[in-house]
Image 1 (cartoon, helix red, strand yellow):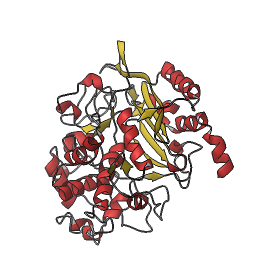
Image 2 (image 1 turned 135 degrees about the vertical axis):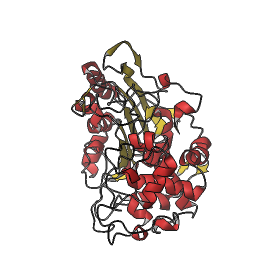
Image 3 (image 1 turned 180 degrees about the vertical axis):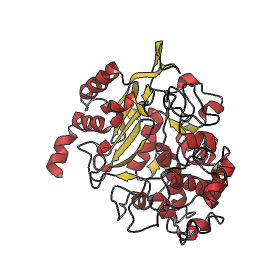
Image 4 (image 1 turned 45 degrees about the horizontal axis):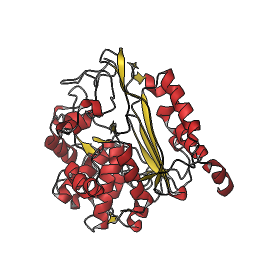
Length: 410
């Protein structure tokens, strides 16, 4: 993608983020794309700032433009959803089919009168299948022995046959955001394609685009090292030493997926988390959506399929099929000026993407806000506006003078 920095007032954004870096926010990376051109691509602060004792390093490592971030739940969109959208385009998947058309062992009743056979693929995408938000498969003190798993295939079998519903399904029910939904969708991608989800997206999406910094389990691939990544939690998965479970990591996480379910129970590859990427690759992945499924001479899906995935769910218009929507202005991370057509997603580690077709605009903010001391379950990085995303999105629109346009046209 070409760069063009002539129409954006960068100082508005830079001053704000740099001030928060000086106050203690660890690091951030921002890319702004409009009309197919990169208007801004900037990093702020550090990829590694603390050691595992929460002590500031004498020589913290600065972020670079190539630095890769743990995308957390952005995996749901830029791996799983992209795979599903491609499969719908190819006629290999219908979102209105029962899940067990593609996963035959997904059957049975749990609890009474809540049959897996009644669940549709669409229910997973709108987070209305009725699952809990999460299940800690990796912690034997939090789950019964039949749900405990430290191995991907066993975890998949548990999800397909044992994880219970907490609510009824479908239309009229408010969505409850759930990682389980996207674990199941990841399994569906794998079963439908005959390859693991990391292999599928690499072969069918990332390699055709020439993306070399978007992958799962990056430290196992051979070409990357810890110093290529923005660090996340300082004391492993212990929340500042307050949590423990068998095999828990206690070192600074850098290039290792933070999500405990993905790391411990899925061997790093899952439909809900596990993907890493950087600014360059994220700009291209977002541009596909702005191009209605096309990049260069490659067509991944049609506008018809894309429209299906960003159509508001009748029970809550902030949900599409996977995508979160700005239709009812209920999500503060879109900022003040995004149009009602904007959509995107966030990731727990500190990431946010906003795609706004009205302005042919995509904004990706990657941070490592969890790479800060943690007290009583709260990370110090959470108190900064940069890590809440909305203020940065607002500033980007204002730097492009789009706030004035939105006031006139909406």
